[in-house]
Image (cartoon, rainbow, N blue to C red):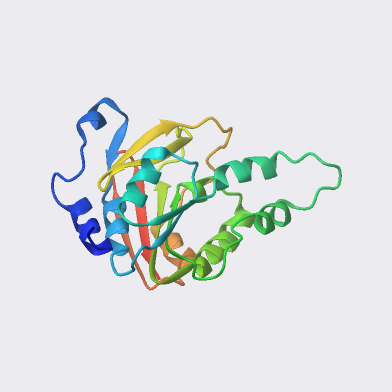
Length: 212
């Protein structure tokens, strides 16, 4: 059996991932995922947190590469918190934040945040960004997706096809886009990280990778 680094190099080598079926799906090339996976290389058997729903393709991709993958669907958690109709229910931040992300500090090498921040109400944006930062170990990375335009945006789910490809699937939750972010706003929001990279696609979706 090869080492984690050897496995990662195999995953990133040209032609290593089969993409023949990808042409029949709604997919996009993802430099952000490629860079995210590359950022895991310095840690043996790194822990990765996926903030979307469980997809077997994503689980298989990371586990076969030697990662330990955790999944916590914060999109679903956000929907449930916002749907709370109990009389005199606490404010949204008090219902949502204490109920999620119950992990030790610096527990993860990487976090896949997808486009979660585009759907967060204002009171959750800064607290959640700060919390995610504490969960990432030094040298670890967070990948987020951000829409450049606010109109005609469908709620989507994302799963990893291979190191350079994401599959986009229709989401069923009634979440709406709350805002779009200027690049300077993102740099300030994730100012606790030491470096960032931005990749902009033709579909008006930015991939924002930050390294702690």
